[in-house]
Length: 461
Image (tube, rainbow, N blue to C red; front, side):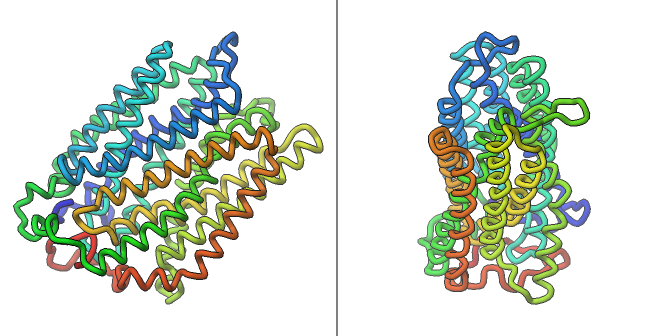
């Protein structure tokens, strides 16, 4: 990550580069979540059906889904290493975009070799793009700039605009006109994102460059010197916070797997004479984020101004507990289904609402937290580790989904809810001790726009 330019052009109080990254990630998430919304449905669709799928069992489909989504995020570790040690974040994002366009386009071909090749290219593309574009967002702000958290919330809304549109558009095209048309449409979305990213390079020249080639002596020196005690302590806090991430995504990612199948098989989806496509429920999370994102951010900002606890770790713990509580609604849905043979849609809506509030408390906050604590030379690598943890959470989600075939949905949903709430409460007990290891990384945050711009690092030395 490079030195922040002294006079960045701004729009709505934030660097213009933020909006370039906003739209790039929006289209990348359009392609990823669009494909994700129909992947499991495509796998389990009968091979002899009019809109033919592969005819896999639910268990096999959820197993592939879990492995695939895990690898997508685990690939962020090599993606982060390549950026920090070789290309820099800006070029790595470009390469990732090219790989994603190729991967989604190949999925449109109705052949098994194309199916697995496309998944492989998407895994590689997300691995290159995902950790590095998030690190670039942090690079737009100097250390201590209070706007950083707000910037990540805006960026996160962009992610979910893409996810919302894709679940509706790609999901509908895939279910009604053909799965491979849906896959192809996801590729078109990623191509638009890549074009937009290339066109906006003039606003990103100062961030995401390879530090080994930097002309800034302080940055070059940071690549060589060993970690300080403070930096090591902060890394410890990050790794412990990643445990929250694994548990959170292990539960949350039931959305694309078990909850997706539950919506299709067990939910009464008739609304005013129209049967709501199962994939459309995937859009609820993104829609809630678009409407609630700034509200949740404003709530935490208000707490901070009132002197109440509003640290990143506190927000993340509360996010896990709130999201876990949402699964009690799925327990109620399962209970209703067992009694009547069908469950109401409002249970899914309520579950996604709580999941969304929890996500807004943990996911954009975690991204910002990493850019505050990670040592400069390991910026993308630590972001890659974070996304790898989400990947392990995705695999855990797949395993839990598979277990539902034997244990039943009620047991799985209730077990997830209870574990998330209890685990969050246990981490809360040790919160103050963990926060002491950050050595004041979040203290004295303020608006630095009117101060003399100086080189900034992701973590104080």
